[in-house]
Image (cartoon, rainbow, N blue to C red):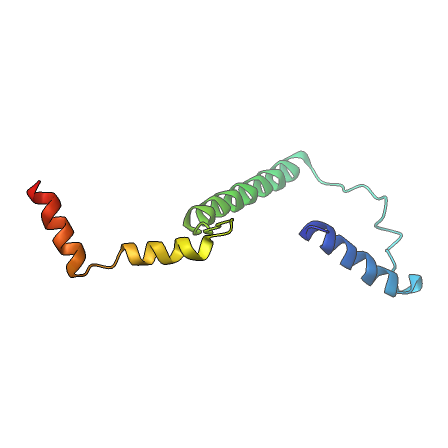
Length: 105
């Protein structure tokens, strides 16, 4: 079985195999070239990238806090446990009598 990352990678590979090689082209002038920028611009770009990454991490953390946890139950009696929890919250005459008796003792 493949996880989501492997499945995505396999899908990309299959789509790339469908393309003919002459359809895939790179600009030979830009490949292997050196970007000519000064130190200040490079530092500003790195700072901007770091700020974006920090903002994304903060948003992911906030989203993780707000996300509800899945209730996973494993075992043979999970339906019985669900029904038991539902019946536990029902308040009827018998439950009221039991509570009164407990309070009296």
